[in-house]
Structures are given as C-alpha cells and as structure tokens.
Image (cartoon, rainbow, N blue to C red):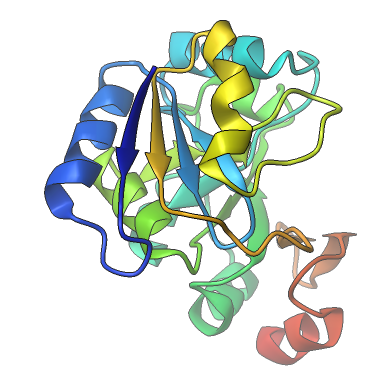
Length: 208
C-alpha cells in the first residue's frame, strides 16, 4: 500500500492526481475529510464499489454515501429538487449530506437498490480536490473496518492494507467528532435522517 503526504489546506495538484488516477483505474484510496478519513472509489464502477465493501468488511446491505468536488459535480449523482438546490447553495461546502433520487448509472451497491443516494460537498480541500480529479464524485464511507472506531489519522487506516487498500493520502489528523447531518430532500420539505455536525435548526433556516 502506498502512502502520500498532502497539505490539508493547499493540496499539491500532482500528489492529488496520483490518487485520482488510482481511483479512475478502479482503485480504492483512503483520504481525509472535514470529519473522518474516508474510502474513495469510483461510484460508477461496480467492481471498485465491491472492493470498498470487501476492504471494510461492510455488510452488503448498507448503502455508501458520496462526496463531490463541487455542487455541479454533485448533480451527476442524482436529481436535485428546488429544496435540494437551496440547501446545497447555503450549506456547501460543509457537513450536510443530501439524499436525492439517484441516477441510473450509479453502481447499484452504492444505494442498495433504493433508488436514492446521499451526496455532499465537504469542507476539506483534499477531499474536494480528490473528487474533482477522479471525475467529480467518489465514495466516502469511513475508512475503518465495520464496527471499529472511525479513522481520524492516516495511521488508523493501516489495518485496511490487508484488505487490499491501494493508497493513503495522509493529510494529517482530522477533527473527528460528529459526522455530517443527513437530510432527505426528495420531497418538498426536509426530513432529518441522521443528526450530525450541522444543527437541524440551521438546516431549516437554509431550506427557506
């Protein structure tokens, strides 16, 4: 498994491109976000998504959230209602995951046949740059074996090497704490799916 150091605030484009190229080729990369370290793969590649499940020992009936490099890239994941567009404009980049109707091209394992997918634009520069370089969207499930504590440092990810992890982007420690707030925006009003780092009253404010 390869490990590359990257500046969390101003990521070197060449370093990020090495990791992005790995993802485009079907690889799986551990990377820092504004909450935890995540596992990045191409969400349109069935085999790559299957590798994420295998590396994490993740139950095959659990969906995987996505990260986008920008709000425009996030729209490649699914259909954005007017409500979703308002929240994205106010809360991104940041710890808000929006549940939207998924496009047909997304690997079925990502949404487990539900037809909906969670996506966000993170506040971490490395995560955004990696997603942008990999094609706009990457998976973003936590970089730990299922049931074990989440990874907040690159060293915490090393246990995944045995499962076939290809590369680690080491951006130093991340803040940990609460995960992103998850909100279903498939309808006309927001529905709280998981409380998280963005308070619910702020979500309601942003929703207009």
